[in-house]
Length: 340
Image (cartoon, rainbow, N blue to C red; front, side, top):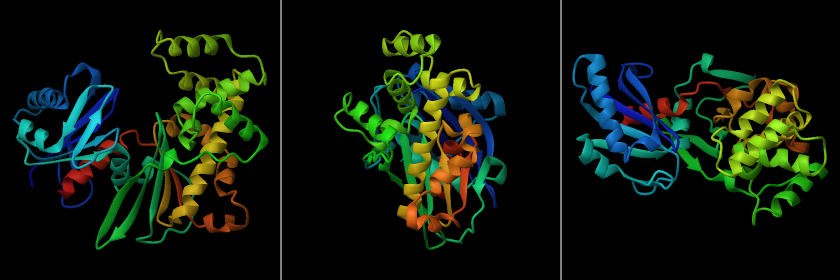
């Protein structure tokens, strides 16, 4: 059946794996490794290093017959550009460089869409069991660096996955504090999308909004961290520090920041549920959700998803899950490669 190569390619790190298709279930992983993306001039060079390491580990030279890479950015006609790395990726060029007949590039959130199809119950935290309907649409959203969205529809004998740029839709505040946040962000940005508030950077902006509104005294440690990050003097993630302080109940502004962030996250999840009526499941993925799981397990998070006025009842039977498996994008790329 041949060996497949899969990758989850991001601006910071790239995950690669070799796998062997199985008659049933997910392909069997043979070798997997993680690399700092910026350490390589091109993806093809990284893959060559990976294949060499795989050969040493497996004791034979692996020869993948097909490959799929999930890319953190738009993919148009088999081409994607990772500008922060200076990488121009072309499926045909990669096929020739790596001597792999079938190479596909897909958007990273499309890869997550395929990954959902390979999830086990242990990879999920279920917020609402609902009443799943076979072959019904599936919706996925996930906050991380940005806010990714995708949806799946049934065709023939399998699901098709469609990436979306729904995270760039307009932010629609519902309360006085959210209207204040919108006004605050409009003083910084020419336009405010949902992604501006439901993302890692959104956490920092919400924190600064509450700080500048004199909600409470700012933590000196977080103040210094945000300042140093803005100046490029620190690689530490201020959003992660704010989340950690909120979880530890160490900082009032951080706690209120995450309370507002999770409400806005839930609201957008509910919006997506209304748009698609995904009775096949609504999945909350992305890098942030597993790290703040205790906050998302609170009853008010699910309540905020379903708070949709007179049509709230439509969400009662939608299965709602949080994806806790960190490698869902890699699994999705692997499953897509298996289809080639």
